Image (cartoon, rainbow, N blue to C red; front, side, top):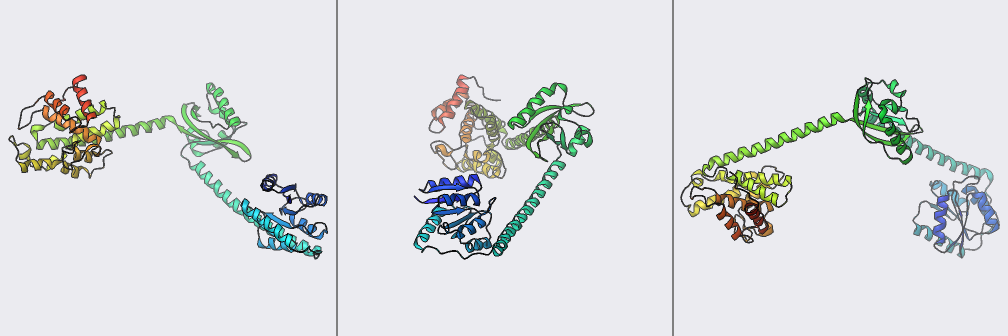
Length: 490
């Protein structure tokens, strides 16, 4: 079994490399630095050595030099595996010292194993090496110092870059902290003393910055809040659970206010601290109430606009005044019976008010004609569905109002108009309006006939159940009128 000596000062890296090699059939011994590696190899020479570069006591370069100059060890291939010395000059130094490979971490496991296998095969095929050409101390130390200098320069550049990023991060945090319109502060989790406070907190609470920084969290709380405060801080300190929720604070003038706190644990100047953002609950509730009233006003204005449009439509057809409103109410009642939510019922009501909007394009004399319509006049009447869609599609509704206006004369068996849609191709809202429209039209007075009454209307719905009308919608309508006492709206 091939014996590999791993030289690595990082315990985790040493463990992972050992597990990889042992899992692939190698026998492994380990050392934490060059001196330990030499002692181990002298006791039991390995078949190959894999060494890091940066290590205490004796680094990898010094180990490689000693290895290749010792007669009992120079016949064993030396492989470097380093993540810190990655400059091409570092590799040239390693090869000049007698190493056979210079691998840069991290390598995929398969790639590392393949490199190791190749080294062992190549080494086995070459003749035994003679004594290594001695590298004078002055030459070695010069090359070694140059490698250390390269490493130091690279580390300095990395630190400078990290410092720039840290400085930018601190600046960003300071801007976020100081310019935040909501009160913010930082407090020590052990002493509860304020460590920093922003201008918004000073303005809101009335304390000066100096006063704040001489206080603790307890000074801002009324006495009855202190037990809860201490429990909360304990949870933050011991379990990392942030301090949040609604709290009562006392301003400098003695006014008690309710605030909502959001906090985060972090390191502040080497101290474990908590940063807190506070919002005046009363102000938030005022804004929320203002927004709620504004939304209600918009809804009222919107429904008023719908009512105006409905009135304009009815003014063109005075004999059927109120039809759209009654259809909307019947449709809403059917939707509620089907379990639709309030938002969807609102859309159904709007669609009911506007489903005959296309009648604005039909000549008034046809709409009010008391006699039987000619075929051409009837075609003009049928065109109101398409006309309504063309008018309403330009309005951005949160519901499919235009599509419902287009489809409210479609029938489940395809016998309707204007598209002859069938079944599931018809929107659910349009299926409800189809039933509500027929019920209202038959039960109410029309220029060309007297009202037929609600029973005749329900009989038509029953007759067309499953053919012309959606059976679920039809059943809901029949249940409303026959079993639940629903009355035709006035």
